[in-house]
Image 1: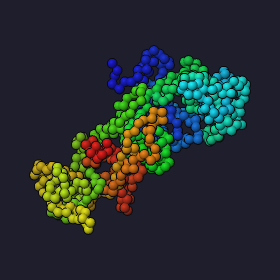
Image 2: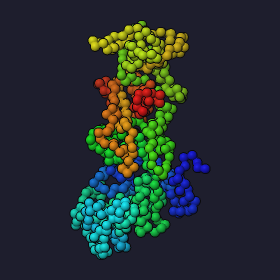
Image 3: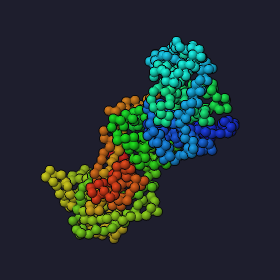
Image 4: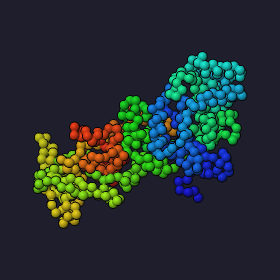
Length: 568
């Protein structure tokens, strides 16, 4: 019987070690293309590749497959390294780039030409595409397929020297134009591209294709288990074809595929995510609505919650759709134990306790987390004038409304029982103040504190609260759509499909204990959800005196309120 959390890749590696394959070594790699920020789907691959290496006493390389300079940038390289570190993994001194191997790859391409396994083709990209054939009909051989080895070597050398225009010539593998696998119908291995590379500058104008550079880079790094997502399954025959012709058997890596992560309400395509950024639908790659690792980090998710999620969803051979609620639940379970409880009012309504002394304030004691008494208590300020939530008062409430109403009683959390006696309205008839009286003996822990009322409200003291912008995030895509397994994303997830109410900002108030909050702290705003200080937008504490405000992001809602608010 398999151990909890076991999966087919663990079984494969365990069997390889038992049989002495790869000289008893385990070496994996995480090979991102530096053409965008990593998303939650990449987190699954990071945890898997680094996790397998750790589990079996091996090593995992970080390698950037930087073979397309037109779309790559050092910004993405730096962001990827930060994300991998933040998730808790280290690659030591094993930071590699496909561009490190450009000379090696070029010489391996020469070997293919010399052995008659590659040729220079003059067909354009459109002509190659049109002669490729279909799933039911074979392709057509290029008229340049039978060039001599000598001519191919000469042309390929001149391609490197920059003698030919971009797109005028490519190097193709000579395999089988009638193969049932379209990837084996003389695929392109190299193309001419005049674009500066972020590491090699203008040294090269001849760049390898991903499907050529990837397996050979694995072999050059002595990778044993090349773990890829399922869309590369049809590319594995080409992977094997290349390493079998260019490396001895004991140096050949093996490719294994697993199902990538597809998640409801979520786009898993760097191209589509880039469109959101470039068209200003979101504020950047780290916008808290984005499924990028940097966006999740800024929103307040912890690395441990993401690692737990990646372990819980498992590793399978077939694609499936994961409910985003699983990710939220991993965060919620962790936050429930670790987050300090505080009070914040998002939509304030002023409440005046008419029988409380006008100039009096008192310190009340509140527990920081009832789930963990070791987190201790804090003092909160209480006075005559408070803010409560607008939705916690109704002048003409329905049945079973247990919050504040005319003549009704509620308890203020950690404080007293109050009764609503009167309301103040503006010229339009809108309630702007609620006047109440309090029972001095009903203080929590006091002589009559055991008196029962059905409702308990959170609040903050007007003269001691801190101004705050409180951001509530909903799904960037409100509807769950069918997954397109060929393009890694939602079928109809276009720029116009995003949820226009995915971000709602409230100008509210928070209790004074949050003055010293840092972006690393996590809080449960009572009855509202789990929040953190925004790492990018929050004003420094010193600016509060000049009209600034703290900025908080909601990480995830409370289990009992999230569904009620229509977010699920």
